[in-house]
Image (cartoon, rainbow, N blue to C red):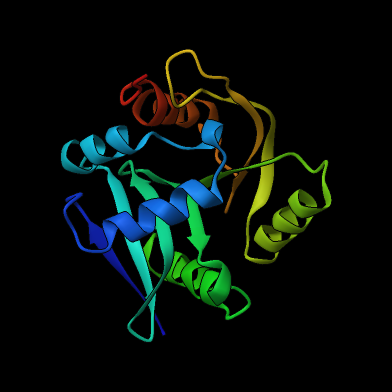
Length: 177
């Protein structure tokens, strides 16, 4: 059984282990620097940096943002040795049960086989592609943005405004070198 525990302090005993997973699972342009993340843990109440445990064993991380009217699912990663144990699926089930309303996530365009499989996985879990011309801003000053697709669990007529709010809070406000 999967449980999530929010981490709000970089001195948490599991934070260093999760940072290692974070840096291994996501390329530099798709993640924050460690100092930036530590600062945001303490300062950004909308960001939920969660340790995922399965049967009381640290299994992965899930970062999401609560914007009140919608959620942004930013990062989900499971330790390599624990993949294929349905931990990701159980986490998506937790999301569906606990994060009610519009949920937004970003995926790589369907160009490589791994990206196609990831998109299909999210589609099987109730998400659809709603925006294919999205540029994820850089996490760091001077960094490069990424062309990504936006998936949501439902259509939303105010999606562009929500994406603007998301960009401001997630990328621009917390940016550092």
